Length: 70
Image 1 (cartoon, helix red, strand yellow):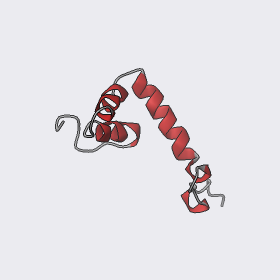
Image 2 (image 1 turned 90 degrees about the vertical axis):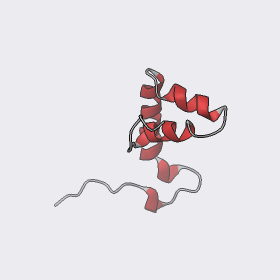
Image 3 (image 1 turned 135 degrees about the vertical axis):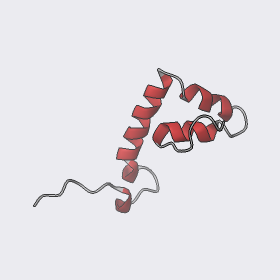
């Protein structure tokens, strides 16, 4: 697993973490790294990240700040 990358973010980071887990999560992580599933995982990750303040346990502090207007 050392050849994947020393750094990852987003859905790829999640998939690499799952590959280190026990089955069946290891298989899920491996599948998530391959297109077209990787594309879907990235889109889902962005959707969740954008709306994380709306999820259970989310707070306004979880929201990204809006664009600054000078």
